[in-house]
Length: 257
Image (tube, rainbow, N blue to C red):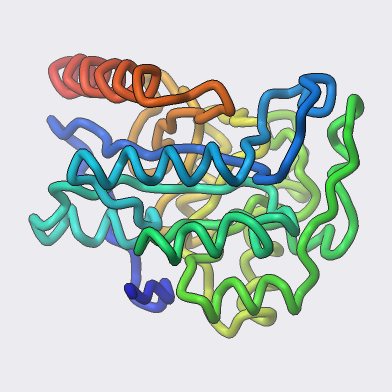
């Protein structure tokens, strides 16, 4: 079983003529039957996640944390690796996602909110309410070999934050996670996927090794890594299409640079 403590610095994605790696984006993993229970399309059931991990393995791919993926790419050993990320730090990562990751010999990056420990996703007005990990839960995830990254303090749109708030969300959350886990997080994830040139530069200056976005457009790079959203509807056929779309977009980005 692989270990991935995130202790070693994450290597940066080369800035020129390199297609970005394939990084998958998850949020919550829990049982649900009614679509109204998942108004934002961010939840997959444990069975769906198991099927998706099995699909990766059947194609000779292995899911790893983003830090592990970037270090492997920098060393020329990235073939067959796919980044796995889980946003927000829901309690169900520990109860549902982690056992499946370990079963399939995968690791992941869990982006957490140290300013909202043990509460819920108050930023989602439509609900449903989902509990967030406590400090002890985050330490348990890290002890299981998963990478802990920052999602900011309070899940705020950083593009409209004042400079002081931006620094608290970036630097303050990083310092709190070091106190919590004993390790400075290498990775950051922009809340809502919202970013601009100011926020990207601030993430770099805050000391992160990389930052994850969703579809950052021309800002794509080590501090704006694109990710592929994975939903409950993504079976084998849809995953194949998403992989192909990522490859085509990556080639286009590399050519434009």
